[in-house]
Image (cartoon, rainbow over all chains, first blue to last red; front, side, top):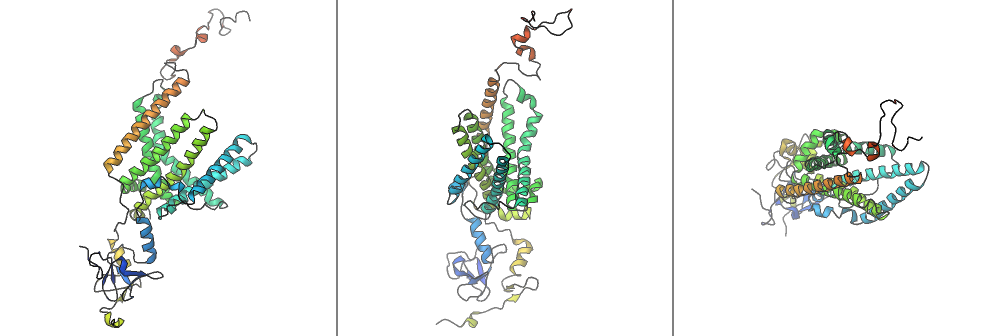
Length: 298
Length: 124
């Protein structure tokens, strides 16, 4: 049963003073440099329950990860604060590199493209990490001269991609006759959509684990399955949103393929949006269940 | 006038030998790290989930239906773009039905083993 604060009888106590032994609510403690103290006698305030934050650092982190933030709000992530400028800068950079790749000769365009894409991959991992720790705005670009980290990010990203696309590729290979059939099969494409969705769920969790925890955890499919279960309804919601944006991107690209410039521009904007938002959704999922997921992955 | 600080103190904190943290033995079993290690650290602070599982799965079902329809439609478009000829499937053995007229006109003379002779190319 919850105990009431000594000063505020209508408020549940969360701490007890080690000096005066009074029960304290959040308003009755003051933050020191590192520890929490009783605002009345100045002695250290200790949490009533194990697992509750006992230091200023823990309290700050707990406030950041437990603040209300819905998945709907996550859809506006790339346009929030300085993120909008970063989003525009990304679009301009992608357009410039695409132009160079199409109209220039020589390997410098390819080198530039690989460099930019590796930065995008690194940025996605930073988005996952910062989001999981309570940030709602885009982080800074990763270190572009840290070649080792960039290469590591690409390798981990490829592993995430393999996990994400393995179910649907395996399903397709097992049903190749249906793909080559002159008559489209509704049942086959329903199965295709289902396996694509399952792959998206696995990829989202693997992406979150690689971004938030140790990079090698991306290989632990067994832990990902546990994380899927822990996430519960949030896993389904995050996957739905990432899947819907991905499918929209696919449809728009298919429809606007024949429209020069406009089609490429719209597809580019949607692609950049999906890049940022899918990473953010994985981060939001991990933020909501970070305490349980820490026990799984650490 | 408030009481002196010393008078307010009714208990004495002790120092945890293992972690060096102070705690009140009258109210707590050990320091905060000891209690956390004892397995009580499962207090959840997760933000509340958006909606129920049933609602989320219903959205998933709608999404999968729409995706299926899209893919089915795109598959049909791709087949159309390749001519829309029924039976164009090497795996089904529908090659003969899909054979263009120019290939049907190809003749194989019985006496000549020099290869196929195309109609209209006799004079060459």
